[in-house]
Image (cartoon, rainbow, N blue to C red; front, side, top):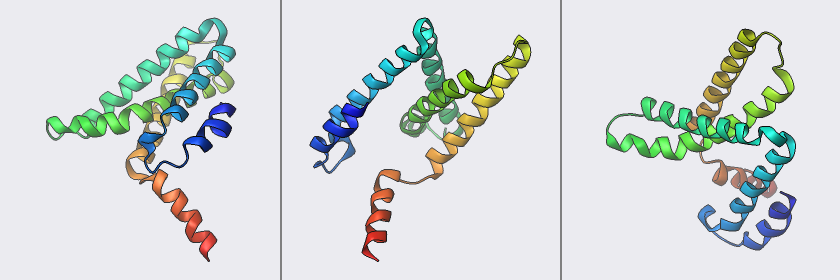
Length: 146
């Protein structure tokens, strides 16, 4: 992960569009998968299944909420898939550290409510948060210009 942030990103930083940062996102994805494998061990495929199900649930949720016509699939793709990935990642972190319980029913209720709250918060942030990639550098430019 440090390779992609400290080596590859500065090389690709001269680009104007986020779609030009191909190697940065590829190496971040590989680093995330390697980190998951290192931390989860034998449960790595279960973690990937949680990510896949999180993306599918988020995509379907965004599609149902933003369904006006056939073109409601576009916000579901651009908002649902990234919010599903972030919600799945945060859920794996919270599940591993905070949701331990001996009773399977209580653990299921805790997991379901935690994932639902995470997905709702992240989806609202993605939907109403604005263009973070544009606004964060503009904020620092304006702050430095004062």
